[in-house]
Amino acid sequence: MINKDDKIYVAGHNGMVGSAIVRELKARGYSSIVGKSSKELDLRNPLAVQNFFNEEKPDVVILAAAKVGGILANMTQQADFMYDNLAIQNNVIHEANIHKVKKLLFLGSSCIYPKKCKQPMKEEYLLSGKLEPTNEGYAIAKIAGLKMVEYFNRQYGFPGISLMPCNLYGTNDNFDLNHSHVLSALVRKFVDAVDNNQEEVIVLGSGIARREFMHVDDAAVAIVSLLETYNEPEFLNIGTGIDISIKDLANLIAEKAGYTRSIVWDTSKPDGMLLKCMDVSQMKSLGIIPKISLEEGIAKTIKEYTLVKSEW
Image (cartoon, rainbow, N blue to C red; front, top):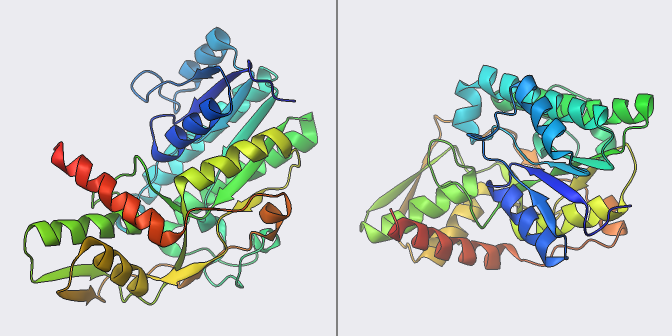
């Protein structure tokens, strides 16, 4: 049972997901939240993580820290994505078990599912086929993390749960074109195109791939709600259960940004998995229903990027 005065360590509290979780925890009255930046605490360093747990003694751990990026970063830095994420997970989960925390929540990703996974992707489809090659390193790391939580639970009675979100976006997103995910990258491209009076915007891939998007505020509600109520070793999908083609997404963002000129598709670049929509029936059966529509979320993200850009 999680109490409002428990010390909750949010690993990755400065990131998009971590900061949304912190906002949701505070909104629910949790009064003792701990966060360390990557400069203050390198989670890849086992001794540093051990010292942190010895000093802070958190009651609850939310593992939202990870090395993340878009398709190009994942393709070109497979070793880094695998090593960094495995190291972070191994150290934090191990120390949480050693220190007998009340609960640990591990966040993964929908990329854990096979490249040609049946749609919508049910939790039971994990490891039923080969992974998408463009992000295999990251996916294998995340699969290892959720399995570590599951195995620690079964072997040691470790109170850990794992949640696999779909593509998240929103407040505090990363708009760096070399590292951002598709929605935030498109927001930047179209807003910049309007500001710069560009004749065309180049978008990577063919646009036929379909993706599921969830606003990070909805994700935070789901994450904290399940932290409070879910106790099973099997992981759960977190998402909207609704997908959209990248082409339709680009057109929608262009419309919201006021861009009316040419969109050029660079088909020399990979699409990644063509279909990636999750079955979220288990999440919804627990009373968790996303509230922010994609249109509303995109409009909000455009406003936030415009504000971020004005401060550069």
